[in-house]
Image 1: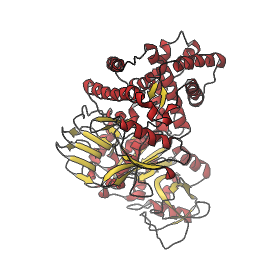
Image 2: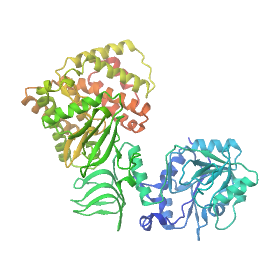
Image 3: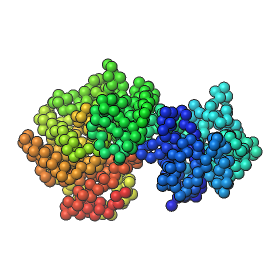
Image 4: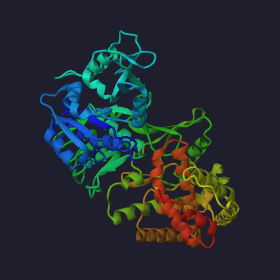
Amino acid sequence: MPKFSIKIFLPAAGLGERLRPITYHIPKPLLPIFGKPLIAITLEKFSAISSGEIGINLHYKADMMKEWAANSEFKGRIKLFPEDPILGTSGALKNAETFLSGGHFVVHNADIMSGIDFTHLIKTHLSSGNIATLATHNYPKYNNVVVDDNGYILDVENPGTSISNPDTTAKKVAYTGIAVYSPEILKFLPSGVSHATTAWIAAAKAGHKVQALDFTGCYWTDIGTPASYASAIIDMLRANGETVYIHPSIKDCSAVDIDGHIVIERESILTKGSSLRNCIILPGSTAKSGEHYENCILGADFKIDFKESEIISASTDESKILIGTGGSDRKYYRIKKSGKTAVHMECGENDSDFERHIDYTRFLSRYSIPVPELLEAKKDEMKAVFEDLGDISLYSWLKCQRNEEAIEDIYTKVLDIAVMIHANAAEQLAECPLLQNRVFDYEHFRWETEYFIERFLKGIKKIEIGNPTALQNEFHSLAAKADSLPKTIVHRDFQSQNIMITKGRPRLIDYQGMRIGPPAYDIASILWDPYYRLKDNTRERLLEYYSGEMAKHHRPIPLESIILCRLQRHMQALGAYGFLSAVKGKRYFLKHIPEGLRLLKEDVSILESEYPELYKLIMALQDK
């Protein structure tokens, strides 16, 4: 149940002039963000903590706003307040005075996105005696709210704007567009066109407390220009651990070449032979055959171009664009080198994998295993430069709805890479001394199961083991059996996020953790991957294909090895999701837990008789 019943008011009447030509077609509050209007995202967040009524003012494209309100999930709570002319941020509240006068209320601009904690803001206001509590932050470009040492408002520079006066040395903060008001603020609002800043100043001069509550560090963006809109969308993609969003209404995009960050909204038309890189395709737009679209927003009758650095967060050095959304602590940047793009890798000074990464790249390349070409390595600086394989992993490639034939074909090519590692490269192991002693042995298998206990069972599920001795005995048995399996070179993290699709061809990354272990571990990782669920019959054909190819090299794969490695791998994966989300703060890994747990339950059900304690423990876990 929501914690509050406080109302919210969303100013949504503006013309969106800085967002033209987009707003010639769509009013700002209805700008799509992954299939949802911007205003709906705000109201979903608000509704999680309050059941209060919703006020929205209207002017520009009022009919579209009314249609959305009448069909939205919030329709029973919405009250609309038309304006003609537009009344400004204060006049809008005065126009809704009857609606707002019954109690405290939230005001939230309809054109911003933020990570600001509504609960903290509302609780602070209700317990403070403030007439107004403003969510603020230190944002030098917009700092124009003058505050005292206790955070109470003294003045506002250039009221009605967000323009700071650079000549003053007073302590200043920026208003985020989010506030909580007591109904007493309404008596400080003049009739007609006016701005809320004038009411803050008047209330403060009358002796009321107007507090600037600091939320510096919280994500915030004003979607006021096409570039800020595109940047906000890409920020959200990255925050979700994604590079691609394709609306479910797009039934087939397989004929379009995609790279970079891609958002394709509903009812878009993707014509065969077009290509997209770092593009946002707005509803009802068409990507024309033979056209290449890059760093742009594509609309029904317009295209807005950007520089890549305008829409994708750069490092402090604008010549480097930060890339990658995986679990690694290494930093990867896209740079220009010899007229082409390349990937610049920076490792910490104690990263023991750096030397292996370089050595393994050279080793694998000698035997035509498709890894990125090493262009430069500086061991003393722990930096290297690699060929740029683009941004589309197999995981992202699969976001586009494709037929089973295409999916099976790309997975067959991936398995060809596995065979090249497991059979061809393994025959040349003596050429890679760093790899020879990296054995995936009993101790490593036991480390994985302890990782599963600590990071997933205890860290995420908060489970205390009922019979730890019996469970440890089963883990000992599992590790001993896994260690006894035939060994070869294995990637060890052979899953869809570590396979890039470059010009339709799979290429391998993140192989610095290679070891000498059972090849079935890699096969379990890719064919029973929590990131993408293959159809059972497709998986069976792929497994048969791989087994046949390995048999040609006189390396048969024992059937028992597959299920043992599935069980082991899925415990490791769940442990990793727990560690990356809870310890590293990459919360987007939590969304993969349900599928990982489903697979683990499937595994342990097959082996119930051998591992009854583990079976009992796993089957009792909730999927969410």
